[in-house]
Amino acid sequence: MPTSVDMTSAALFERLQHQVALFARRAEQTRLGGVGKARNSMDRAAYLLLNRLDREGPMGVKALAEGMGIDSSTVTRQVAPLVESGLVKRTSHPEDGRAVVLALSPRGRGRLEEVRASRCALMEVVTAGWSQHEREQFTDLLDRFNTALADYHAASGGGES
Image (tube, rainbow, N blue to C red; front, side):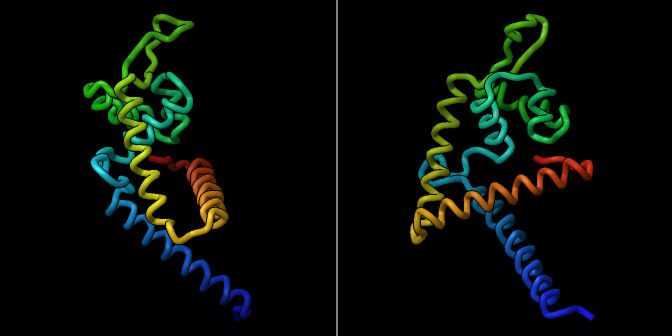
């Protein structure tokens, strides 16, 4: 028979899974797209790819896929429209001219900065009633949660999109 501690934990995990499900739905509804003209103007996959290239610099498809926890064919498929639209450029690897790396183009950097600023403005609006400490605490916990999910998926053979 479960103890009151077990019941409390079960109730807490039920509440947590429900809140995560609501968050996922609301994030998808708004696409966490920001405010203003950049609102909903870049899908999640494109944002994450551009953001990784911005933060880590040019890299090959394989390295990009490994860093994102997805397979190379998915990255290739997601990068194609970014190359076609001029947000990402293919260039020769600086040390091995035969290898191709993907890099954020100047246009891509500008577009990413516009979308990032719009999304930051949305976060400011949504958390307007929160203290700075609450914002920091939520961000730290969400980072920890996302890391734990990524670790779980990596260990179970799943991937991250």
